[in-house]
Length: 348
Image 1 (tube, rainbow, N blue to C red):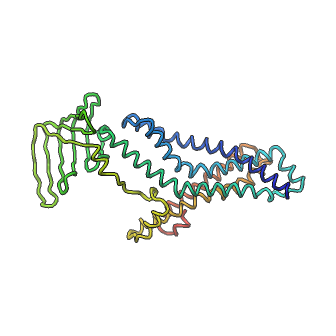
Image 2 (image 1 turned 90 degrees about the horizontal axis):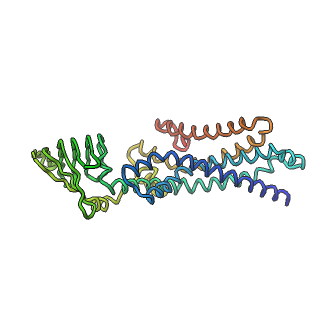
Image 3 (image 1 turned 45 degrees about the vertical axis):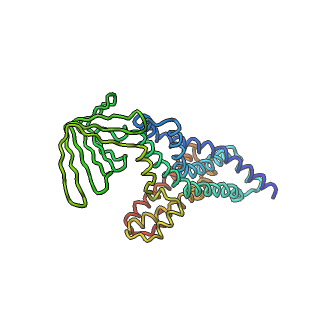
């Protein structure tokens, strides 16, 4: 019995090193996919270093939800492949140790992976996704430049939509400006002008968009009244500090809700069947992805042991194939779930 404990501890320790290396490497690769988004934040929105670091931290839970099961699978596969290649498996068999006796440390390792991924999936992902959304809005609204992207209808500023065909970022001169202002209750003001200028106040976060030789269409939604005004010069003031304080509450998407909030949302009585099905699938997905640690880990165990009869590269490729195949099934389940032909727990 003591010998089995020694073997189990040895195998468990051997699993830790490849797991840590795989987790770091895979997470780093996933983070690299966000370089474009981060560069956009720095270049266009003047995000500081602390904001960039926070964005990376908030992104980690979504990546860890997938990289932890992947790392568990790869570490089990590589560990037993190394033991098999080094004839350690043969030595254990010669000592009368059954292959099935090696399963306890593997199952323990997989179970720890399930718990870790479950914590990330149930709590971390929703926290990270919502935090990214809040931070992105905060960064975007910290500078008016974010709302002056050329040839785009920019609605990052609350109750204001801006379209500009051309912006000279040095002189802050604007060409072909369209602004929809809904800040006054019951009234929609649409201002258009061929030329404009962005002026920033020397104090506070107050900006003025000065329009020249344009027209204002004011629509009174309550009285059904439209008023047209032509102007030579017209100022639209935007206070970013007041706007940020008034818009602190941000609507949550399904993947931005934690487990308690999601269950409460489902029980609130969703009328739309598609919305209800999407919420149920989101709930089941939080538990189906962590299960990948156990399913793929136990699959990697025999693949690693049998690697003596196949080439190292072929065995590794086979393990990666099953890894990708599992996530393909998850994606297929989501696609099938949109048809509504199967229960949500089968789709995820």
